[in-house]
Image (tube, rainbow, N blue to C red):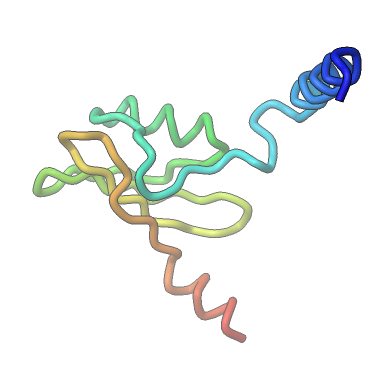
Amino acid sequence: MSRYSKSVLFAVIVTASFALPAGGAFAAVTVGDKVGTTEEDIRAALTDEGYVVEEIEIENGEVEAEVSRDGQEIEVVVDGESGLILEMELDEADKDEDED
């Protein structure tokens, strides 16, 4: 591939990455992501990724956040020391609907 072709390809990739909507459909958190250790940090990180934070509880060194996104309710469990997401569980009612 010529130097010119590589430059054009790079420009196309960079331009395409800016064309994606900010906070669009691709944003999501997953197990292992770091979202913070305080209620404020966790709330901000989840909100930035498109989740609506319904409730946050701190219990036994873990932070449990009840969130919703795209019509699904999810429980997110975060380690209070490291700020890493330990678990993400779809609400039982949403699981039952998916099975039907």
